[in-house]
Length: 221
Image 1 (cartoon, helix red, strand yellow):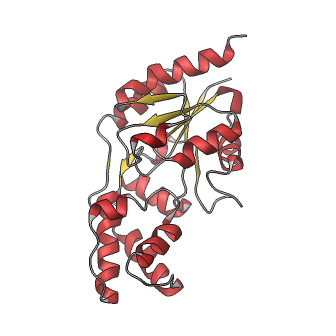
Image 2: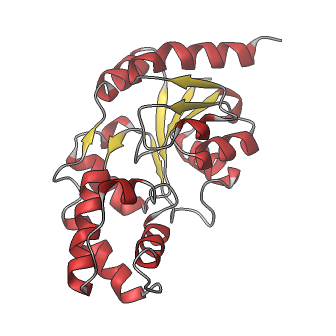
């Protein structure tokens, strides 16, 4: 069976922090709050936008507000690809994987519609057989069923799959699913989040060889 690469989105495929940061600061300005530093927002990424807004408001002493959250979603959706770009080397890595016969899917805690809009704006959407967003299924990472459901949607199988991500949720979800995870060291997660990963990729260029090795190792009796 064709192997499947499951990719996290923010911090793995794309550097979306600049646009999330800008949207958070527009939200702060509307509420009369102090602006956020980029590093603050980067530290809040990984558990979906709802949690990001919870954390951002809590950091300014404010409770979660559904109307504020909806306003952020609308503003971000309209400006998600202003400064966001694929990480250097990602398009080439995707090309190499496709040429080697890999199918690819995205497994992200970002809302599916937002993920699709962003990937389309960056010219990447057609590369993926499925997009499993944080609201696509009843669960999301680190629940392993998020990975299983995304794999089913892509036509893949756990025994021939590898997860690639920069967050503890990616590693925990993959571990629960019995799928090896490659930690994306170029992303937002600190180095200590790599604990439990099957391998660490320093750059996207390392992915094709690492993924081939991990799939081959699983096929060896």
